[in-house]
Image (tube, rainbow, N blue to C red; front, side, top):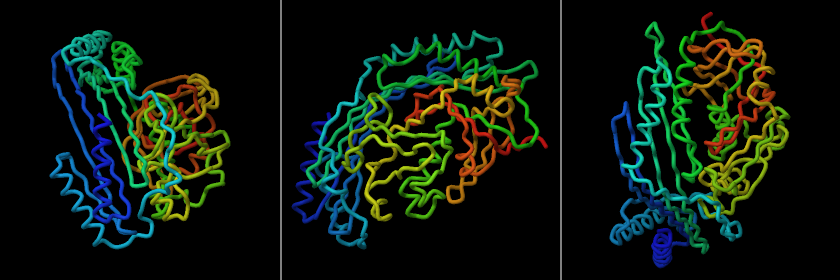
Length: 440
C-alpha cells in the first residue's frame, strides 16, 4: 500500500516542478479497520472505516499554496496541483515559509515495530465482547447498567515526500478494547467509570474480562462520593489522568504558542521551571510506542533528547516554521511531540499515599480552565480523599486550582505506576500543595 502511495506522490512532485514550483511537499495517508460495540449483550454498532487524504504544498519562493483532497483520481490530483500553484503565485510572502533544511532530512530508515495487523473479524469479536461485558455486570449487584464494550482495530499507511528528494513512509496498527459501566447504590445515586487497553500488537492486549472487571470496580468505588472542605492541601494526580497535566507543559513549550507570545514558558530554556526531581525524555525511537517515528511531518530526522533535566528546561518543541519565527532551528517535531517519558522518583502507589499522608487523589478532571499565557489553572475534579495514607471515601464536586508555575515547582514525587497507554508515559504525580474548593 505504501509503495503505491509513494509512487503517486513522487509523480506529483515531478509535475509540481514542471509547473515552476521552487519547492514542494506532499503527504498522503490511508487507514482502514472496524469498530464493534456491544451493549447489554446485544450488538449496538458495527462500523467499517476506510479513510484517505492527501495534502500538498507548493512554493513560489517564500509564497506558498496548500490544498488537500480525499480524491486520489488523476483528474482530482491535477486539479489540486493547479489550485496549489495558483494560490502560491498570488499569496503574500512569508519569510518563514519553506521546507525544512535539506541537511536535516532523515537518511536512516528504522523499523520501529509499529505494524501488526489483526485478522479478527467482527463476528469473531462479538462473543468476546459479550463475555467481557457480562462478567463485569454479574461481578457486583451494584453494577446497574452498561454504556457498552467496544473493540477497535485499525491499520494506517502514511507517506511524506518533498522536493529535497526525501521520501519516507510509516505503516502502523492500533487495537483497543474499552468498557464503560454505571453503578448504583441503595439510595438510587449512580456513578459511571470505565477502563480500556490498547496496543500496536493484538498479542499485547490484556484479557478483555480483566479490563471489564476493573471498570466495574472503578464504578463501584465511586459510589457514596461527597465533597470536602475548601483548603490548601497536597494533591496526587492519578496516572489515569496525569497525561493531561503533562500535556499542558508540552503545549507551553510548543512553537505555535511560543512565537505567538501565548506561553508563560517563552524564553525559559536553561532555567529551572520544574522541581529538581523531574526529568523528562523525548524518545521517538521507542519500539511499538504510540508516537514513534524516524522522521517528523517535514521529513526531519527525529532523535532522542532530554526536554527537562533535573527540573531545567532543555529545549522547545518546534517545527521548521515556528523555529524560523523564533530565530531557532527545528527540533524535528512537525506534527507534535514524540514519546514523552517522565522519569519516576521511585514510589509505588502506596508509598505516594504515605508521602501525601492527607490530601486529595484526583482521578478525573473536567473543564477547560487552563491559561497558558499566565499559567493559571482551574479544573473541576473528582477522586478520593486520603487520610493517614489510606483512602477514606470518594470525592466529587470540587475544583482544584493554582498556577502551573507553582504546580511544576511543587512536584515532590512521580510514581512507578506508569501509564503505558498514552504517548505520555508517566506515573502518578504528587504536588505538595494546591487550593481545593469544596463545600465551604
